[in-house]
Image (cartoon, rainbow, N blue to C red; front, side, top):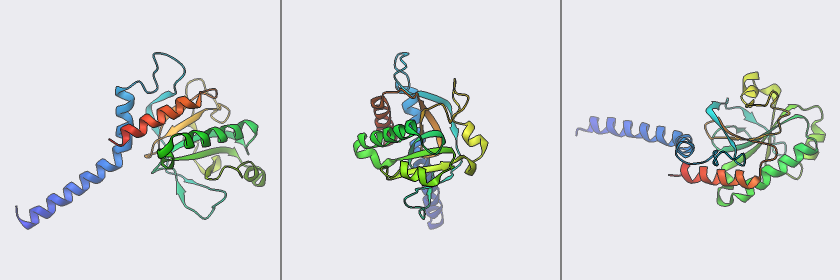
Length: 203
């Protein structure tokens, strides 16, 4: 093999490798959903609902109210997301707590997940920050900063308004909305699903 051909071969292999690495999380999750019982528990409602096909979300910028100078984006890590109407009421705080505990409970994988609160309208920034003061790392996204299509992607069967549906969602590192969980979902189910996802996405 000549030097020129060798260089071309290495360039092609590098591109292929980058392509595989970039798609690996999504491919791994697809394999998990296609060939395991994730999201399907013999017809039981105890698992999350698989969103088919996955809905791709824009790679929007998120805000950490405790570190406003940091640039954080939707993609690159898995996300747990919850939508609420205005600021953050008692139910909202309860779900923020649930997301935090789920993230902590997945053990060694916890740093692969970020938590996102999508707020329809922030009418009282100070009040919202007070609600989040005990939840370091909780990221915020206000609906005015995204397109209507972005919000509409969270409407699943039986949910007319994503902001009042009370559901938790899983978003993959490519920005694909993949799973949806009812408000009364047992957190242990979500933890098990995430652990399965991480196990397959590392293959």
